[in-house]
Image (tube, rainbow, N blue to C red):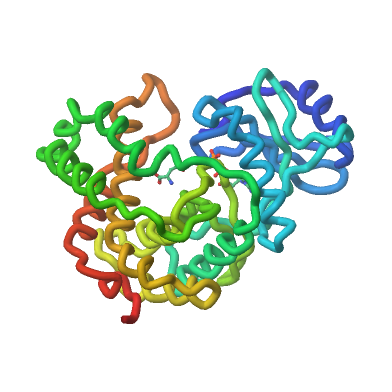
Length: 321
Ligand SMILES: Nc1ncnc2c1ncn2[C@@H]1O[C@H](COP(=O)(O)OP(=O)(O)OP(=O)(O)O)[C@@H](O)[C@H]1O
Ligand SMILES: N[C@@H](CCO)C(=O)O
């Protein structure tokens, strides 16, 4: 479960007292998530989420993430809003870790996304891209093509213990992506991890987006490729063309893809699959003894990668010509 840093009730109350959000009535650790420690706070005024940033989030990136949530929320996107304390600061320190209180969003991630959910996610992703267009800060995507080889090098020696042939297949896929990765596509703020656990719904209505801690500046269509990977495959590994079509149509209702983005879609999907396969593989091979967090399956993304390797054009993802 994702509460790595334990905070005493006294420390929590003292921290909350620095904000104008009412006194703390109750707090509990949240089991979901793997990156940071999250607490649900119930104060006299409302519910809030307190996040303590753990090792994988670099402290120097926090002003980007916090500024971005503030910017997107001001632009009308339903995302957590960092709350400022009485000194006007949104970023504080608690139990030795950087910490931030954000507003609580109603809704929940869906376990089995349907076609309607995919359409709504496509629309919301494009709205995020438009709302982020005038965000002045930039952050390099450390997990784009230049970041994949270092991950592969950490995993290659033991890759075949996960499944035979994984090392060679991945080496070839990586070399091809490094050679052919598109440059010069329209770029801007991307979420980069808009998986079903990071999109809240109330019924069929999308109620908010969370977890901006991979957000960065990169090709906008790459973000769509991440979402096609994360939302449009079935449990049996098959790609659901109807869901893909719904997602792309939803996106294009808000932001039309340029022809060069449409053309790049298959390679962007391939890259996105490799990115999640590699981070999962490194985690899978390095589970700390006694860990309570179950690593995610890298082979799910290996199978997706192989689907993308057979795709010839955006039509294979449901984009009408
Ligand atoms: N603003 C919010 N409003 C309501 N619930 C939230 C909010 N932020 C986080 N949560 C809850 O906390 C859980 C964990 O949050 P999050 O996904 O950001 O964790 P993480 O460990 O940073 O990320 P990851 O998904 O990468 O493991 C979510 O699944 C959700 O239940
Ligand atoms: N969404 C990532 C986990 C990091 O948030 C994955 O499924 O591999």
